Image (cartoon, rainbow, N blue to C red; front, side):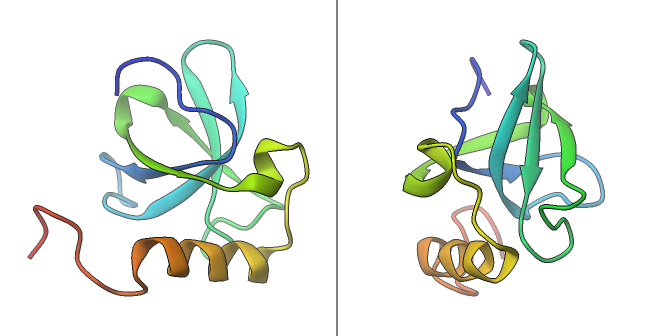
Length: 94
């Protein structure tokens, strides 16, 4: 990923055991790390700190998080499912 993702932006993990998993950026730490949550495996109570080089940005941005309000985990899961197509494979995945 070139540059930093925005807070609230949908990203996909490119490295680690969560590779391919959609996540939402809930915070940025410095110029190297993004704090991400998916509302399920990584709930808002324990988000994952990811190196931005290990993330692939998508176009979608959650309006609530971008405005500074982190939604509850069920709402975050529903939004991710709606944006990603709820189970449809992304380009490049089998």
